[in-house]
Length: 84
Image (cartoon, rainbow, N blue to C red; front, side):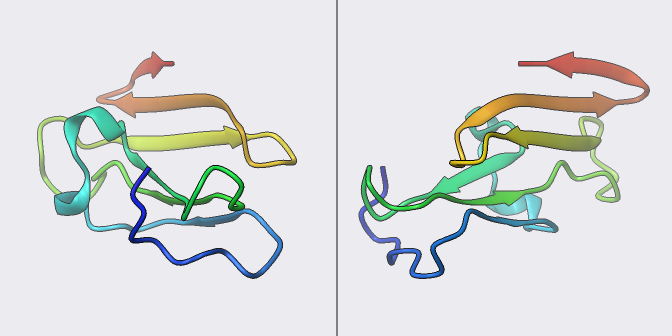
């Protein structure tokens, strides 16, 4: 976990889209999870670069539980579904 994130003081899981794909690494799979520590309520930044023109740009879907745990991650690229 990146300790440089500030704590989520809203008391709610936050999901923000349209994160610049340049900020995404290959292993983040269209999603960056932000937490100050393991007890912090998670925040997610998501994007899959659907309008970036990149060959691997697509649509990303993140399914979360009520507590913010990741249930599923799906990415559609060129009409092909990739599931995690």
